[in-house]
Amino acid sequence: MRAVSIAEDRRLVAGEHPLPSPAAGQALLEVAYCGICGSDLHFRDVPELFPAGTVPGHEMSGRIVALGDGLPSWQLGDRVTVLPFAQCGECELCRSGQEQVCPHAIPNGVGLGTGRPGAYAEQVVVDGRMLFALPDSVDDRAGALTEPLAVAVRAVEQSGLSPDQPAVVLGAGAIGMLTALVLADRGFEQVVLVSRNPARAELATALGLTAVSLDDLPAQAPACVFECAGTPAAARLAIELVRPLGRVMLVGVSLEPLDLAAPALLFKEVELHGVLSYSRANFAAAIEMLAQGRIPVEALITATAPLEEAEAMFQTLSARSNPHLKVLLAPQQRAAQASA
Image 1 (spheres, rainbow, N blue to C red):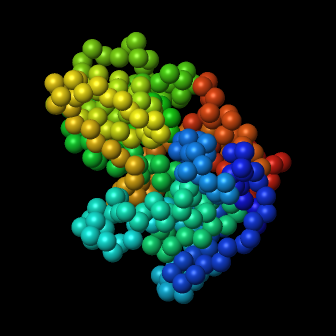
Image 2: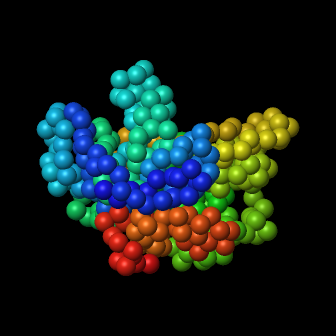
Image 3: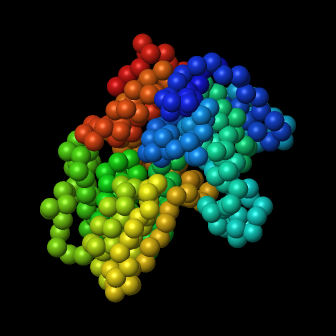
C-alpha cells in the first residue's frame, strides 16, 4: 500500500509499505481522508517524537475493510472516524471517567509518533475501541474534522466560562477557529479571536466570528483566554490579558519551555488548565455537532491533496503567511485527482 513516512532527513516521503493486517479486537480501515494537524507540523522535526520511519496521521475518516476476531458490532463497509488515543478503558483513570489522561493513550496511539502507524496511508489498523460510526449526514471530509473538533469541545467544556463572560482565543489556526466556533455555537457572545494571519481573519469574519489583531483587542479583560497558538509568547500574552482570578486554557502544543513570569500568575491568581486529548463523550459530541451541521466544514477545509504532496503541503502550512486552515490528505487520490 502507499503511505507517507518521515525520512532520515525529516522529509515526508510517499512510498510502498507492507499491507497491515488486523489482529483480534482490531479493524483495518481504508482511509478516506486524514487531516494535517499542527502537532504533525511541529513534531516531524523532533526525532524523539517522530522517529524516522514514522507514518503520521491521527485525524481520519474511512471504511472498515477487514475485521479481526472479537468485534461483532462492526461490519465490513461501515463508515467510521477514529479516536486515535489508545485509552485502555481499564486503568484507574479510565474507570473513573478520566480517560483523556490515560497513561497508555499516547504510547499506544495511532499516528501520534511513538505509537503505531497513522493514517497518512491508504490503510491503517486501529483498535475496535477507537471506532466511532459516522452518520449518513457526516460525509468523509467532515468526519476527518471530528478529532480536532473534539479538542475544541473539551477546551470549552473545561474552561468553566459562562456565556455572559468575555473570552479571547489566541491563534486562528484550526484549533483556535474551532474553539471560537464551539463557543459561538453554545451562545457565547463576547468572544474575540486574535489572528496575525489576514486570510484566516477574513475567513473568521465571514463565519460570523469577531476577529481582531492584537492592537485592536477590547479593553475589558477576559475571564478566560484560550491559548491555541502553541507558542511561549502566546502563553505569556494569555496570562497578561486574563483578568484576576481568570483561567488560561493551554490548548496549543508548544515544544519549547513556556518561561512564564511568576508575578502575574501569583498576583492575579491565574489558573492554568492544559488540554490535549478529550473524553469519549467529547468525541461523540463532536460527531453530533457535525451531524447537525453546526460546524461550517466546507469553509474550514481549504485544500485536499494526495499522499505524494504531503511534503509540499507541510511546507505551505509552515509558512507565516499560509492561506490555508485545514488541509486533508486523500490517500485514495492520485496527484492528478487532487482538488483545492
